[in-house]
Amino acid sequence: MKATSLQQTALFRLLGPARIPRLRAHARAVGFRDGEYVYYESEPAQYVFAVASGELRTSKSHAGGRVI
Image (cartoon, rainbow, N blue to C red; front, top):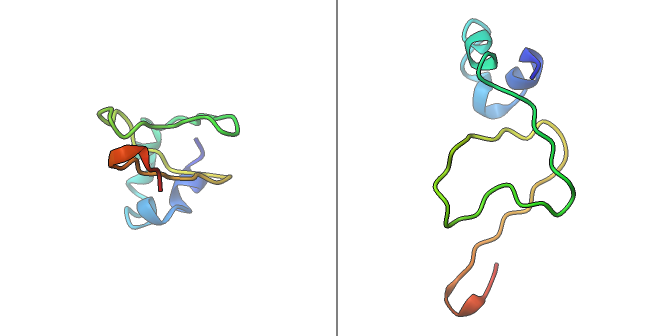
């Protein structure tokens, strides 16, 4: 992942340019197909995702199977 991509995200912009190379050493670009799930709410999180391009849709399951 490019350092400029990380610096352009609101989440990582506050780190400043000196810390970006350290973060970049642990980052990698991952692609997902349209409609593919990135994360299921019932699973423990293993990664932090920053969206470099495209869109994500989030949903929340509620009792009775209702999804919002």
